[in-house]
Image (cartoon, rainbow, N blue to C red):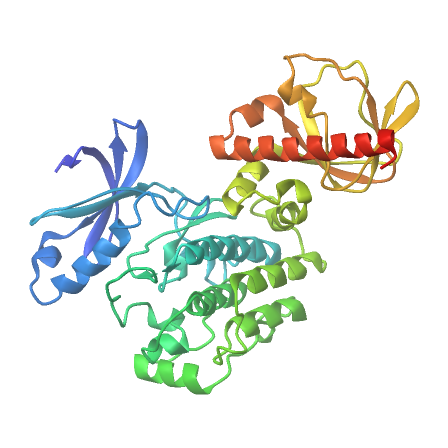
Length: 423
């Protein structure tokens, strides 16, 4: 076999019980893709094939619908009487499973980064009415460092669908208590599963261990899980608390939303957490962007995109951030602190967090010269965005920048008019 449909097979990536995954080349789109091919025997099986086909159709139905930087994109799907396959984004770094053994555990900062990105991705999916239901390390792919992508939505519950979802799916060690009881599910079941993954990344073991599913379910339904710090001394109380709340049996005491979970992860990261060793520290940066007025209309997807093409830097009090007469190839958005806008030595404006400066370089001609100095009034944190980088951004991301620039322009004109009229 040299092709799957129009996709040229490069090599086999792995085998499962009912399917195999191949690295293929999509010559039409000029990209490598992963193709999950269902085995013909499993597809034709009269007894178990019905469930398999339901799971396949669930995943295939998400093609082109869940577009998020931390979710594997599904490009295409085909199902005939004899064959079925799903074409998806290829992520070449393996799965999170390799970071769950006691001799390869990631640092605490890396764990926070990974789990935070998972939480934002699953929050995005839940807002589209999708619950994954099978979150585990093997379904979290590593693109690079702590840059991850969640995959395998075959077991997902589509809350907005008219048909009934398949019961009893999931991996027992990561299934929530309500899954074991076959009770109605909501996003809290994914929160529980991600809590198990977090526990495993921290300790190299699962919170519950048993020799069979019945004993495992009994422990989950009747015993409190241990705290991660019982197995790793450097784990602070804040991380213990995040895991404890995620693994609560009682739904009223478990995190009620992904936002609560994400916020506690950010708080834990801010509490003196060691910086990630596998990647850059994006958790705090992403959360900071979400709090700035400039980015209030941006979705999570656009904010992750901004992180990819922006540069974070600081300026000490008195430092010139932009100089009058220099060509403008970038603009800045203040993240913290204040800055003075000076022209010919005269103060003409004060800027604070959430405001932008130098944006006329984006709207004006290439090489347009700055018309004022911008000086840090105290210690200033900012993001620096090159004009060329923004022009290469997605259309929706650029549209949101244009909207924010327009809103700020209107606010500044209104303020200037009130000063002139005294109203």
